[in-house]
Image (cartoon, rainbow, N blue to C red):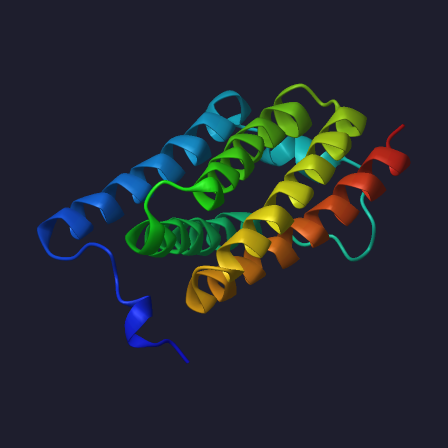
Amino acid sequence: METSQDAPATSGRRAWWALAGFAAAVFVAAATGGLGVQGTTEEYANLRQPGWAPPSWLFGPVWSLLYALIAVAGWLVWRRVGFSPALWAWTAQLVLNAIWTPLFFGAGLYGLAFAEIVLMWLAIGLTVLLFARVSRVATALLLPYWAWVTFAAALNLSIWRLNA
């Protein structure tokens, strides 16, 4: 339960502009990750995959929801403590998120992509830990993302092994 001392540090118009800024940062990371990978649906379909691999159409809706959660979580923490170590961790995991897609899809470097997604997973874990000190809601918003990246890492590893 959040207490009165958990009240937002910022409110009003500035807070809404900040939310737009967090959404823009997440959009830039998603767009950067997707820049060199247009038309890779066929490439993904042609990879040997485990039987539990989801269809390619599922990734867009899942990532859209997760990116919205990531933005709101960052914004909630910013409202409480400003740009703090928690948001440095949030920024680091977002940069790692943007790097993974070109490694896996654009360059087809499945092993390097796996190593990178492990770093991303660790960065998300650090972000969750630091967010937990600030906002339970923000922490909860990141848990589906961390779970999905856990699944994506297992899928990445499996695809790397099957296509080596």
